[in-house]
Image 1 (spheres, rainbow, N blue to C red):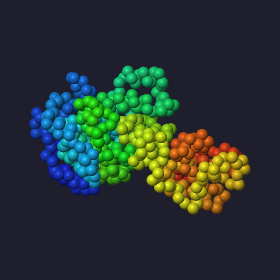
Image 2: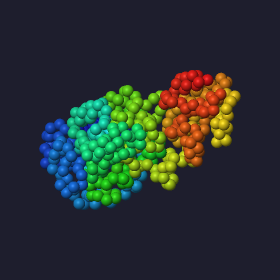
Image 3: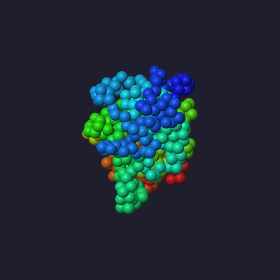
Length: 458
């Protein structure tokens, strides 16, 4: 939808923190009258499509005729130095970055909307005053609340979301051969590849750029080095070949709490699942609420390791094995040397490898030991630091030792083989009179839950 400058000015002043942007005169696509009905202008752009000669539209709502790009403009875009542009946009607000993206690519860029807090992207696009497009991947397994949000967003902004669906034959083959819930047994990558990655690839073949809601604080070891704009390293765009697609990440440097401040300030529709404890929202079988002391990404694919919580849509932003990681961890899970240690307290014993091996061998320990297996770079470990330190202080002098053991890097194979490590953090209780340590079974990491676990076994 194209909005009046009066409303833009009002809303920008309401949310001053997102930064200033020059007021723009919205460009009306060719053939569309200036008095077009509400919502029509936002739809009068080239639809998402596969890279076929006919380029058939994927959505009946996007029925306007394609506008041939001007060769000079296409050459100018191709010649952009995006590394230099990243430096130019250092300190720019999400609104300024969104405005630059829409200005550069017009109808050949679209916002990827997942039905979660990335509704902020649509709000930023509206505030620029420029026409914009939105697409979404309907996997067939989304929550009902997510579908309800899609409808609210379309009505609120006067747009039609361009939906992409998986190939029916591929879904049929997967379910017939492996069942409806195979991802619980052998990982989520295969299902995501069929239901998300391949439909996304088809969608991007009809674009020259796309806009995502990735943030650096969303996932350990995978999203910590996201630039605000980049040549997409994984997917191809309309022109085909490497370098044919540009990826914009306007909120890469924004904290999750600031996104929510913006959403509340602008009073935009949000997914009702957020009020039920959901933070990161995907497909229904693979999404759940997060608990106190948990990182937001722990609500996704919770049965898998912390560094595996990606579906493949943004695989180009994952640090590859053998490369030095910019922040977090590299592909094989080794810790970044500069990561500061955590669980720092005089009430917590820092166990070495020989120390925890001695605990394993003892049959009659003088006192029980509660031990966390951790990695200092892991946000899930960082999220429970305060509660674990408080617990250690409560148990000080009680006859129970509280300890920590850093189990990443070269210690990880040992921890997996001997200490039941599956993901970080793992909490073990070494009882006084039994050999085998007992693994804390819950993901509730608040003080009272941990204390109840200890007291039930002491």
